[in-house]
Length: 119
Length: 107
Image 1 (cartoon, each protein chain N blue to C red):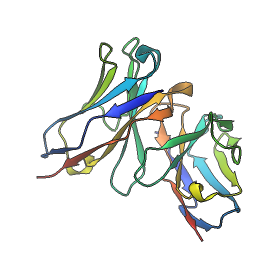
Image 2 (cartoon, chains in turn green, orange):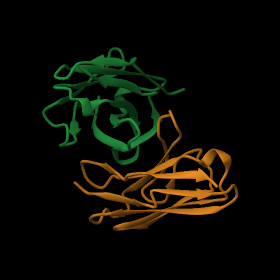
Image 3 (tube, rainbow over the protein chains, first blue to last red):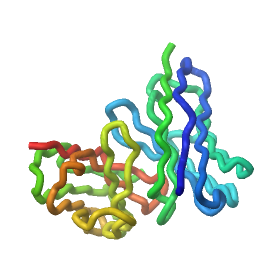
Image 4 (cartoon, chains in turn red, orange):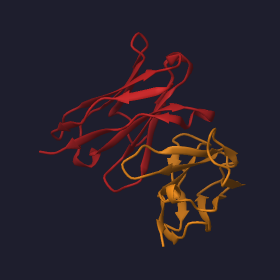
């Protein structure tokens, strides 16, 4: 079955960087993109972007442009989200999802990774 | 970026009720609109994409309609597991954008 397993919680200081991983299994990794969505505590969902592991194409939300890097490692079927220059309002649960129709976050999601930014 | 506005922000309903949630886009998005359900502490779940296409294994009591700027999600015959927060997402143009969410609570 398709599974996306994300890395564990992180606590970072303002200005630092964090790298969240999302390991996929149960399907051919290069055949589907990976999308990233985040959710601040008690808040709604925020689309961050997506990456195509097959050709490396990426689309970032302008809200994160310059601070976010999405990568994939096909040898381990893992996608990564790196966010730099962390601020307190980056405290959130970060979700990965396999993209479906029209590159939207589809039917398979990771369990979420909590990133806390605090001095 | 396209702004997505959902209404209401919350509603109370009973098991068996029929409810409707509305999502309005700040500009036309054709039929490129999805709906997600999120239960507390869980990842979102895709219910509907392309405005009215039901995602695999989603019960038929969920339905979506609309095009352009105005969309609706209808749940016909609320079940206990349907009490959750629902989000719309426009997938017409990047950056994709979510609505603010509608929390469906038990009356």
